[in-house]
Length: 193
Image (cartoon, rainbow, N blue to C red; front, side):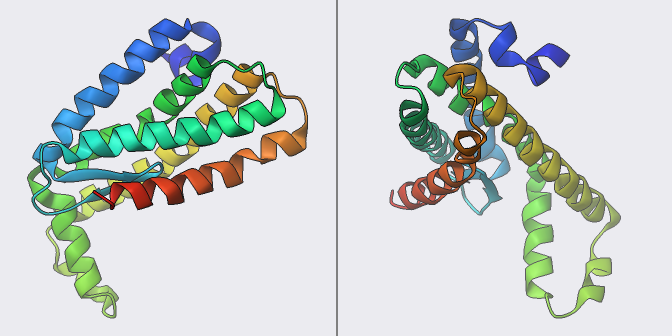
């Protein structure tokens, strides 16, 4: 398990990564509607009311396609010999840390907590009006969200370096704006349908 987390692109074959990435995408896309969760951007997960069965799946497909296209554009720029399957695998695998966030909204606990906090944004003491379970879930989700974002960055960086064999620091740093661009484009397309 540690090898999968730290070096999946070096330790596993591209077909294994592709199959695993697609299966996990499908699994959490099927679970997400039951916890009212949307994956409304390459880096985003939000809770909403009445999430339809197809929405998380479409979200994840759009996010994966947009991230793949953006990463492949950069990969082609730094090494035109980069293979598509390696870039698709990066897009699938690096987003895996975000999927377990769906469990934090069982019975809409995160949604209710978030709505309460937004409604009382000018009254920080109002956080203590929430049940202790809501607070525990809120802080656990916050910590897990930070962990997921760090792991996403680690996986996308290692995957990109492995797939493109890039050496220049300037090319590596281009990953940051490319991911931000992918985030913006994916949010546009997710909210388009």
